[in-house]
Image 1 (cartoon, rainbow, N blue to C red):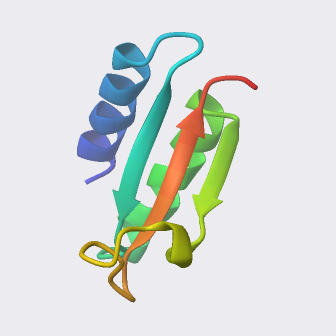
Image 2: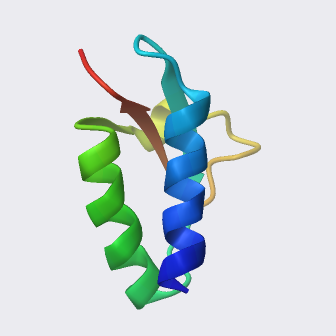
Length: 74
């Protein structure tokens, strides 16, 4: 599992330019993967903003899903 999480974060990092951002819809499914994912994201994307639920379109604003914006720098 850690390997697949690492590959995902590496792919996201490779696809985002220096000033780019990742718009991420996230739902916790595995506590182990969750911990590894966010540890790796903090290294690759030091700027992380949680999107308030009221700013997410109602069609996608599920209670169990959160939105994030990940950036490599400010």
